[in-house]
Image (cartoon, rainbow, N blue to C red; front, side):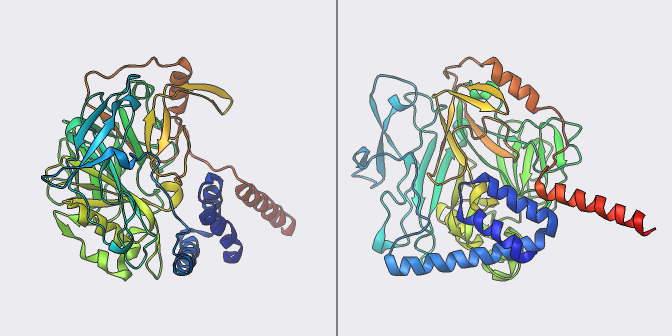
Length: 453
């Protein structure tokens, strides 16, 4: 069974842009259980890593190379002669206006100095604006982005970093249609998509992946007034308070929990807590705490969130060929005060910004009109232009600007109808060939028992 199960799991990690292979892995996990699948995935990760290292040594190139999809041209960068920090000439015409005019802004975040000095990536460590529909016109950017390589032993590993100014934006959480699984699923609604009012508000900045599936740790989550899964003491928790303040910390330590929290999501132990790196991060044996590995440290896609000490900057980090240790190293370089891992593995690390290009799409026989479309942060990320605009089975975060001058767009009735139908309570089921086969075998066994009697 393990040998047969290895085939779809291997395909899943080779064809990184296919959601159906993820379903295949889930089917295998449903039959053989999570531990055998973890053993197989660990083996696949190890083989992939060896192949990456060999290929890089021979060619000097990366098998998993990727690029940011929205990056300013080099001629939009200028140096500040006094501080050395880069100025960014930000083309506001790409957001709301049709008349092109250029505004110059200085990055409020210090640049990151590359660890690999012999072959610096273009723009590595230099913060550049990340445009989205929710960015107010003629105002300083709310989102900034850069790339960084955190591992000298794996020079082909690189991360994308997005810095989000929480003083000018608001964080939200959305439960997925299926994950995390909960006993409350049949009692409360799970839309799994950005609300139509948010899609048309002109304030949407970004949306990105949440944490693990419930089966991988049963980490707690609360949103919309419902505790979908109870909290686990000591686990890293991102919480949102009534006044919009964002917290990251270990549950039961310091300010988490408190009576003002209106939403929270847990995932694994903290990476950094109150300015101190979790000592377990540096132990290979403890790496399983941040992923279902069995014997060795896993190099795979990972994502995480970090918060500055003053609570102003929320950092999203994601990249290929990362361990818990190298992901934590990025947050150390950023100087965050608290940090946590979110999801891992390529198909599940997704970050989107949005443009005003509207879409007409077919969704389960319905024609849906969305006022905006999604744009991946990284060209090789999974997902498409409808990411988080239509129901998605996993939980996610999204960010809106606090601008009072946002241009509201009309909401199409088809989108309202989808929102209403997506909220119909239902029990998540996987109607697959493997499940059909199992039911058939159950029937055969029952008939055999009757014949035997």
